Length: 409
Ligand SMILES: [Zn+2]
Image (tube, rainbow, N blue to C red):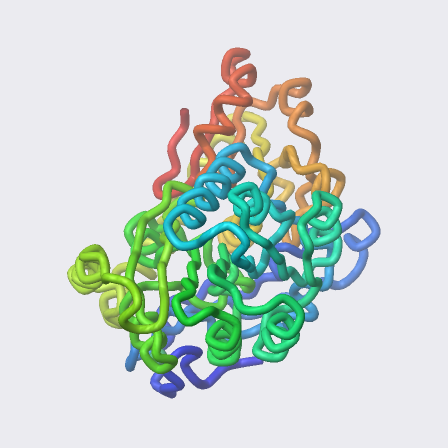
């Protein structure tokens, strides 16, 4: 469905700045049978709201279609991921809660963050729409409701579990279409001095490091401080902290609460100033510069891969993250260029990438087969991947990191 109104401020002045073409949902990995079926491609375009500055997709796929499949992302797949959430739990529990208070994680995945909060004595509750992933959390002893978060669900939760001191959402806020209903749900469920903490890819990093592959249909909004602050104000909330995180490329943590409850860190004003200086909300600048850089990147990456192919080199890929599919489909990289991808996550092995139809094999295949090059699609975990696959390099294989500029290591 095409949206005609800003998701945060409801302005109708939306200006298209980047068109990535048509893509299948980036988590819709296919099994061998499905390769023979038609595949639906949806527009993937960024518009900027001229009133509040929010970057957003103008085309929204029905969440029932987007999330109905066995959602393949597990937050505990990588060591970096696990460490990050364990540390986040510890920081939040110490700063904002007392043992016995309730912490709720929206989009709780397999429950890594909640596990950490539980270890600090908090009562915990997860909410996640993906049944297969939530089942794992429940197995691990994390009480999880299988649903999308909304005001309606917030009412049910409050009745049964009471109000929360901490509500978190990592990589979930940007996925929400009806943000106003979501925020009303937070307002309803949070204790008066409760904190609402989200983590999301930071727009500033997306622009500066050309992380355009983080644009995909699940990510409806691309968050920055300026539009978010304006949005929070409508609900009597404010941002009192903003902290960059060293995970997923450029992630930022936003700390929010009802106005006047917490001292506002000076970083908040500083980030807003940087956003202005970098002109990330400037429609003309983004259209003229950023959109062109994205195109140039495509030419450069393709040139590199096609040159290698023409020299008779064999190339495969390592890792099959959702963002990899934006890169593959936008650049037109298919099984004719990358012979296969390899993965650690068992859930993806044996399936094919949406659109580009590249088979996903276990990581071991790379070492048995030894192609000449391996393109790292989860470039945000490149260090960890190169370390765990160092045998590939020792045997003469080379890694290609695609973002921000394609490099061979
Ligand atoms: Zn707006």
